[in-house]
Length: 187
Image (cartoon, rainbow, N blue to C red; front, side):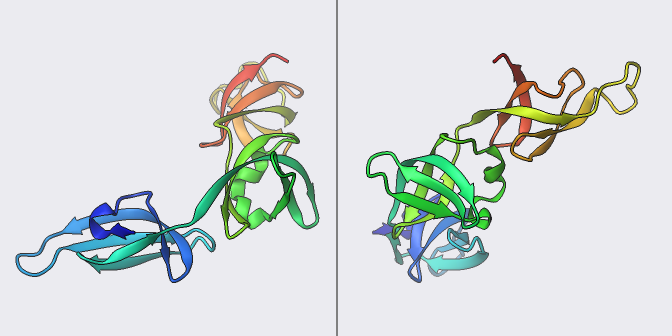
């Protein structure tokens, strides 16, 4: 059990039977009375954000979450299918659960899936992923009014800004945390 003194940003706790993560935390001690712990909590299943204030002495149950190493297999009409590397159990995640992370998934990529009651509620990707550019306008010499970046579309459908020297067919490295171009990669 956690007490109010254990509260901090990023801590995962159970509230009303669902896992929540503390997105923001503030401690105040009024002149008289008990200390107040003001928290912004994010529901890890629905993604909703709400404020809650706790008084010292309250306790919290730790969230019963599990990280599993899984491999991305394929995408079908039901969503994205991952396989546990040890038990060969398959887990389906929908686009809403994955969010923009779905644009960085490649076949057979290993990822960490956050599980709650045998249900996938989140994904942790590698920090960098190599993807092929499938569409990019050719750069015209002297076209510097727009800077040195141009739009490009990757094999997964993700669109981003790349330097002018990147062409269709190039393999580039993308930072999955920011979604930005990092470098060109040799195959």
